[in-house]
Every structure is written in C-alpha cells, then in structure tokens.
Length: 318
Image 1 (cartoon, rainbow, N blue to C red):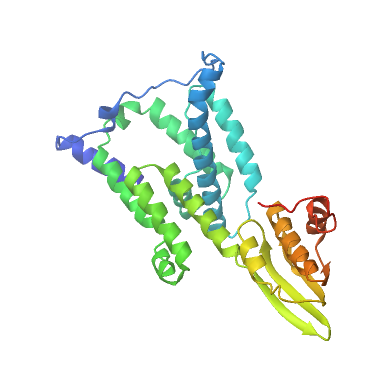
Image 2 (image 1 turned 30 degrees about the horizontal axis):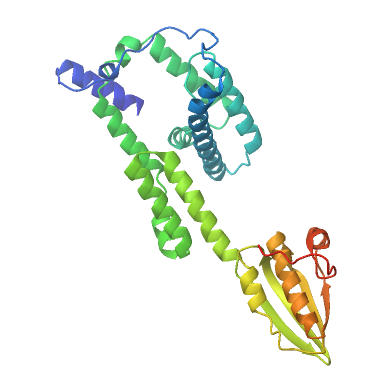
C-alpha cells in the first residue's frame, strides 16, 4: 500500500491530474497536541447531551475491539486478554480527551494488515503510531498532496483482503436465525452508514431469537405403580411458563405426583408462580405433590417466593 501511494501520488503530481487530494478535505495540524482541561460546564444539561453519544461510542468501540481481538487470535493462534484490552482502551480514551483527541478503538482492517505483514507484538503498533506522527509533522506537505482516489483504491483492496469470503458458504448452512441476524445487521449498516445502529439491531434480534429458542420447555410423563413423575427439561422463566403449565394433565385424582427439575433452572417469579399453579391444581384433586431435584439457586428462589405451602399468600400472576 505504501509503494502504491508513493507511485500514484508522484504520477498525479507530474502529470498534473486534477484530482481531489487529502489537503482538499481540510488542513493538517503539524504540531504536537498540548494538554488542557476541557472548558465544559459540568451540569445535568451537559450530561444529557454527551451521555447518549458517549454510550454509543463506548458500545461500538468495545464491540469492534473485542471482534478485532478475536479475529487476530484466530489468525495468530493466541489467546489475548480481552479484559486488559478493554481497560487499556478506556484509560487511553480518557487521557486522549485531555489532548483534544478523538475516541479510538481497535480496527479490523489495520489489525489484519498488521498481522499479515508479520506484526505480532506491541512494537508493531508503536511503530505505526510513530510513523503516522512522522508523516503528519515532518512530511505534512507531501501528505496533503495524496489523491483521494488512491486512498479509496487502497481501502477497497484492504476490504477485499480482510473480507471473510467463507461467510457466504456459512450463510447457506447457518441456522435461519443466524442468517437473518447477519443480513439485517449488514443491511442496516449499509443503509444508515452507522455501525452502532447495525450492531444494536443485531444484538436485539439475537436476543429475541435466543429467548424464543430457550422458551421451549418439555415435560415428560412417566408412570410407575401409583406414582406419576413429570420430568421437566428446559429453562423455566416468563416466556416458557405458559407451555410449562399447559404440559400437565390435571385430570388426575388421589395419586402421588413427583415433578422432577433435574434438567431445569427456575429463573424468575413468573416461573415460581407457574410451579405454584401446577402444585395447587393437583392438590385440589387430592393428589400428593412432591417437588424434587431443584438446583441450589432455583431451590432458594422457590423457597423464597413459592406459596403452595402457604395458604395465606396468593399465587403470582406475572
């Protein structure tokens, strides 16, 4: 890329081609930044203006940095410290603000080029920063003459080189929910030119599909002598309580009923309310109901909120 920039810039200058250059986009400051305290009133009104943008930048920057770290880990066969990366990025952005700089994060394109060029440690990123500073401060007069079409061409080649072409074959084989999330995210990013909106849409859509997936619960009935056992499998929470209650046959009288939660986790008060309804309905028909094999956290929640052993409390209707 560097050779292409030098050669094509030289061709443009010597042939006097009328092309838009870097300098046409604005002046380049050729001095080092100085430390200063931003003169911004620390009021609630100021926070109302800043907070939405800062949260959006933080989320997008963190997601892209973690995604970049995962890609680099796959390319190098290493395991990076994501927590350290996140903390370092946050501290750097805070300090950066006192020098008039913009918030930054790890970039997929630059990181992939760095790895493909042989960079493996901190020295490569340090040299990249120092070289960029050298270009701006020392060679600023030359940088402003670089034609924009040259940079556009390089970015296109970078995109082609960093694009995961195997994702097309994965898109065909992937579950429909994953494929929908990928397509919606890409479409929103391209349509709005805003990565944050695409990421937020993808996360929300993934959450909806995830809830729909784990809300499927199974209740298997087994009958041994005078005992009826119901084996519950799945996650019991607000989205699955209706299926849970509907899975039981309440036309049973004078029997011993065991509800086994070995393969289930009880998440919220709606789940406890559903258990209450099932137990109370069976007991109304003179059945003996036993709840067994709750894990520790589920047992603690049921003991705290359940009312099937307390006639003075009402069943949760959530």
